[in-house]
Image (cartoon, rainbow, N blue to C red):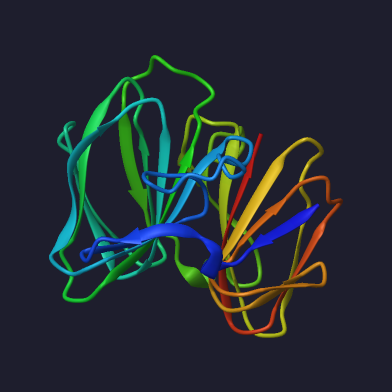
Length: 232
């Protein structure tokens, strides 16, 4: 099955400094039919105004992946980590037994991110944070694993979940296939550009939930940038 949820239908709220759209139930948005997809619990599409951001707050027992679409995000946490992650790059925070962090847009323009939360497959471990650049040229016409808890994905940022977060870039007219193993859940969002997926049109920032499909054929109708989560 393939289920397309349009960007216009997403829940969310505009707080002035933050314009947040939620693919799944989050904060004041609650839809009992959209509580997650397999191990994927949250996919937020956030636009953060310049000079603002999320002040220090706690998390535990969650894998939090931030994919920066435009601008940059500046991270600080209670472990003493500090870092700036730019557009196209990724940061991962394994909240573990507990961590406090802040995420700020210190840039002159708006920052746009996907924030993805995946349920961990083990607990009781110390928190951790990391970031890594992923040049878009390396993803041209193919998927690159950005974050993973699956053995063999040594170039990806580590997460404590039986899941992968992948990214790809396609030129208009290019196609890419993806096979999802039996029993797993896939969720794909184009950060930019329109796609056709197994004959269904998907616009930028729409969400595509899929499972029990032998393969996806993804065709770019425009130059496109996409992010995909493959989880149990």
